[in-house]
Image: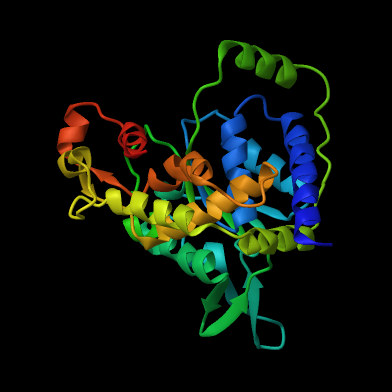
Length: 317
């Protein structure tokens, strides 16, 4: 099958996938789209929202519809790296045997990732970056496709350990979940308080997802689109010549080169999922907020004036 036919096939399956997820998840269309963009780009996503917005249900539904294995890790202050990665035990014949931890799955939901100390957070780093883990000097490859979808509660900061910038940078998207609208909430209450649960059908195999990820990487991009993405990221750095007055006044730290890579990958995925064979500047802008939001650090002036990071990014377009 040629790449053009493969893109058409992807669009068809993507639309069916959204319908399948809608059986369970009411509204949140943009959130679902960004999660799927990160899946097809081979990236990880951080979901930020208050409790009760169906973050866990969303990830579970997405993994069912994608036909992937799913494991959930509840992060707590006493969680150890071995609770995630697995550990060696002595078997009956006095030999060491490795028992795999919950990180060995296709989709790993790291629930409330900021509740656990940095040592345990760091245990995820190698898995996210290298798609492998090293325990007692032995390297174990993880099954592909592999995604970490982490959740974070933005309100309650007591007893939490903010993710360091290096780890935040490993997430392709930071996705904000908002409260549903009145009619959506009415639909949610109706759907969840009566009748049987809808069955979510698996529409993909693991190999199909890997093939679609490869397809997205093969999509050609015009030089002006790449230059636009790199310029956009350059503008977020207060010490760069391209920085606007707003950036110099309100931002302490801008995005690194990984943001430029993710902007192009995200734009390719956005174009492909909407039936286009090459991304344009509009595709870059569509994914920019989710990709840049967690890579820029506001200063106290921005906080004092109530400026959101989204408004600042919007100003760069």
